[in-house]
Length: 273
Image (cartoon, rainbow, N blue to C red; front, side, top):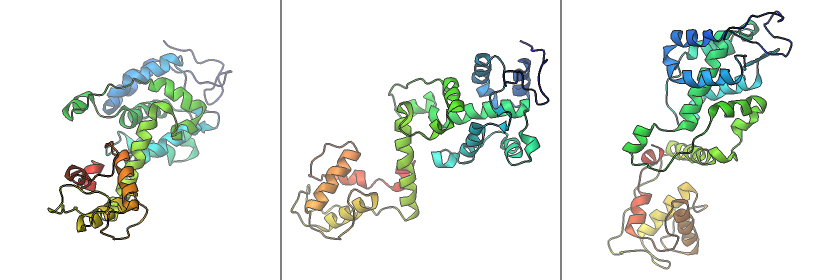
């Protein structure tokens, strides 16, 4: 599909406020940017849907969501993702350059689309099927259309920060916990709890140095509000144990078994990983 560009203004906008382009430029772009080749099928799907019109520019330059996406890409570390962003220097030149750099440009247009799908794959797509099988994670995945999601974001960019969005709610919960664990790690994490050999289990009313260590551990993660340093298994600790077990998918009762302490002893680094 090749468009004859007639009846357009100096920036390429037609009477409807859109900018058409030659569809063959998509293949040319990916031939010149092979590190983004994985994103080509979705980029082609996006532009077929939009009849090969620009989606990242309006008459004022790069649109609102383009700037939000650039900020998101720059902060991928907050999503728990360590990766090299392909052609990041080119994106920096556009968003940190002069106003002229933000005028409609096919390379900027296609680079933005490719990096949107790169971002969506890394953040929302999760681990590859091969890796999830390796770690024995067999829950079925829900399929999402990132092309349709982009259309929603272009209309309302604030949706990318909408934590209540049903299809990504679990992701945002994990993101919040990751942030919390990283803050705990910076403060030194938590100490290993030593199990008192005189006890096979712990119940309210028991006294032991192990109880004091458990209390300290739960205060670090917020299951109890503060550490009184008491070695008595009191009502406050019992409430914290119930909260801890609920948050970690353990049958909620006040009995503390060695396997529960082993679970608490998993290091902060392992939790983050």
